Amino acid sequence: MMGRPSTQYSLYLVLDPDHTASDPITIAAEALDNGVTCVQLRWKSATDRQVVDLARSIHQLTEPRHIPLIVNDRLDIALAVEAEGVHLGVDDLPLRDARRIAGESFIIGYSPEADDQIVDAEQAGASYLGIGPFSGTVTKSNAGPALRATEFARRRSLTDLPVVAIGGMTANNAAQAFAAGADGIAVASAILGASDPVEATRRLRAALPGRL
Amino acid sequence: MMGRPSTQYSLYLVLDPDHTASDPITIAAEALDNGVTCVQLRWKSATDRQVVDLARSIHQLTEPRHIPLIVNDRLDIALAVEAEGVHLGVDDLPLRDARRIAGESFIIGYSPEADDQIVDAEQAGASYLGIGPFSGTVTKSNAGPALRATEFARRRSLTDLPVVAIGGMTANNAAQAFAAGADGIAVASAILGASDPVEATRRLRAALPGRL
Image 1 (cartoon, rainbow over the protein chains, first blue to last red):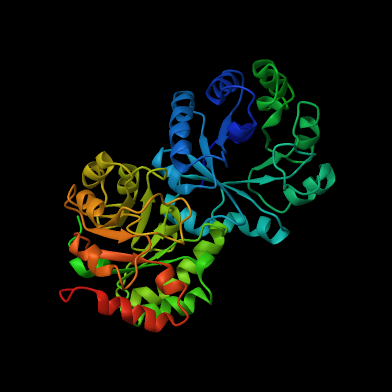
Image 2 (cartoon, rainbow over the protein chains, first blue to last red; image 1 turned 60 degrees about the horizontal axis):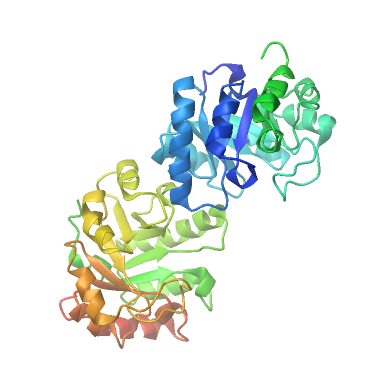
């Protein structure tokens, strides 16, 4: 279903304008120029029209760099801006419906919450999973208790899909996540909240295993 | 683009579970059996998954009766449940994108707020317009001042699309709206808040012009 290199999700930026200290488009451009391999746009406080407009602007940055843009929650907005993917949670559009609507080559990320949801996700149409919170997170208020490496590794072992570790990821705990089986780390505040997003992205990039 | 009878929107139920006194599926069934010609599902407080599930249940009622089901705001949910249409506002997905994604035969309703939005709507892909609030509304808190018949008629004259009058519609002001050029009336509380939804629907049905 995927046929994409495993490096695709290695340094995955969750761009959330509600948590950026400065202009989100500038931060995205800086992060893309310094090693981010995937961008998800998440903007809960905006109108749909605002998300569409920002997504189009971000897509103009990602597309020439062959970096996938993934829209959080909203398949309709992802299709409207011709993004490469959507990311769904267990309370969102069902995976099977999203896969049927979007077709085989579309990226569909999924955040399972229970073991059976992890096990069933590939069959239901997910392209990759986000599993977390790996550590404490400041960006998502209802993320639940931190999994830490042992529980992350156990959940990761339940699927053959690529898995991105999310929630409190930093340059300091990246090695732990990859050792626990992560194919990538998803970061928000580590870049969005940094005083120097360029330097923060470079430090995260340097913390990835050599193969990525 | 439409090729549908003009009676399609004549008695248009906006089904909003946040404003129903009893089970929304029961109310929908009663309204459908007593003259409603179109159903929109609007449920702002629910998760996407809850809207998907309820929309599927409502579609099982509407489809055998050849009544269109229209999902408020969300084209992805409309496509997921194979509804007949979506209804968009000016802060939602752009009409042109929705039309491109959904194809020519899909119903796309639109609620314009300014004259140029009314004038441009047909070209942008709208199938019909909702114009209001015709009278005072209790269901939508931010609907703005009532247009009344004269201003409704002026706005209605700006487009050749079918126009549904919405906002405070009752059996008592229905004749006014049709005289002002409405092709249909959209009702929420007049049915949802009625002590007897069957009788309320029949009274609305009886208030429609003879040709409908």
